[in-house]
Length: 298
Image 1: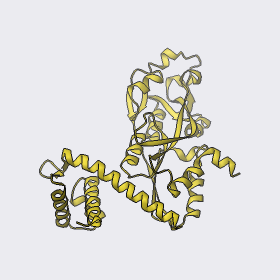
Image 2: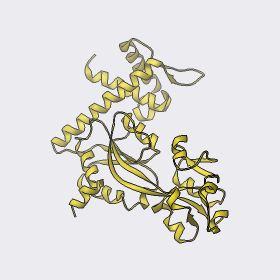
Image 3: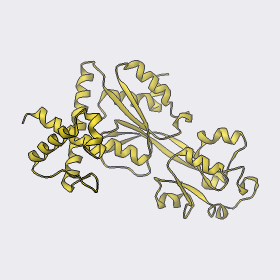
Image 4: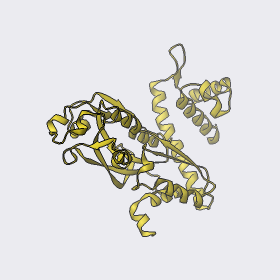
């Protein structure tokens, strides 16, 4: 077959895997399930092995299908990157920039994301921006699977194949609310605080939790908003970014517990998939977000 037809089959395969089924991929591909089935059968014939199983147990990739998917995503990502790069050389910067960030960054003065996006959209009006809020694990996986082009966040564990550009350090404090018994206590001991009911984040390992002085958590959250709700309930203590909690502190609703013992800083980084740093839109966004580059433009 021609190369173009091969790529079409690979893109259909990637969409089917992403949507976990033929029917769910219909809308994205604008194809009927029978057409998708035909294309998938053709790809399986070309590669010489089965890619997926469908039945009462639901949709699932075979072991070889999983391996081919990984390589398919890599190839398609490199081809998309090549197309964007050649377009930028011609001065025809369009397409979509898919960006992922952690939640609560809107209150972070160290990360002028809204300002950077405003400058970026003015400079590249033909480019469509897709902004997603994800956990650290989801951000890294999205980059590796070429579902994201660029990400900003705190990453406790680094992933192979990604490049991390440090941006700044975010201050984290341990908080309790005005409903918690510790709120009015003036002389707390670290050993007492470390035994309190603490909320942890879903992407924290036991090692990460221990690093902050706690042996176990009694609640887990996916977002900082969920963390704040549990802390405000009075039943838990937990960590929040200083910028996010500040307004609640000013209202007298939150209090920092033993800052010298339990405070810490998170290293925020801008992350790209290895090999994509030369792409013009990614270079532009990186320059807008890096402190040194911003300072040089003032």
